[in-house]
Length: 264
Image (tube, rainbow, N blue to C red; front, side):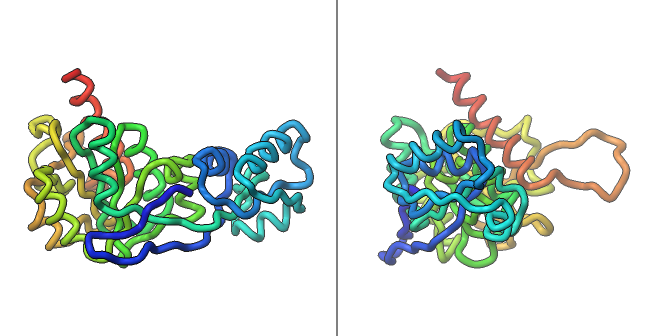
């Protein structure tokens, strides 16, 4: 899986082994050109489908193994494997500088998404998927206090996590400071911020999304240039006072894309 890990400090790349499952996730992983050791296919998979994954695996230099469905379920820890899984040789995270270079290579103003304490892998996967589809140049996650790129994240992202650079930083606050030094305006998604309709998310922008329960941390809020909130219909019953973090990410990322497209 194409990742690049280093952070603001000259640290060595952080690489870990991971199992990825699901048809879209495995397909994108193999097509991305990342290092894959083994592709597992259930022994009941139709030959035409098995042939497709075998051809992709051959191009990637991976070994194909046919296994019983119950064994694959045990390996993945879920029956939601769709008959295929792949063991990536390594997950290599991006450097923060790689995200800036990705924007420069595309001749675009930087568009980044930062996750502050997102712990649910399904949420992180959905955030990465929205960021990728809306043209973001990368996602930033912390080493501690949040989930990393796992098989579940890959599956939830529909393979986008194999395509979009993801930087895993040891200090999210310092990452925000570095981003601001690159003249990128940092918005924090938080209750009490300015309504999205009155917020201009055009230009170089970084969106910070907080944890599922408490939102962004106090220091993160303080470091951001401004806060933006998503309005809700009036008169709703109490008890549901905010959008799910991945839903909020999708709305905000789409708004950034919409504004950029309008300027072309």
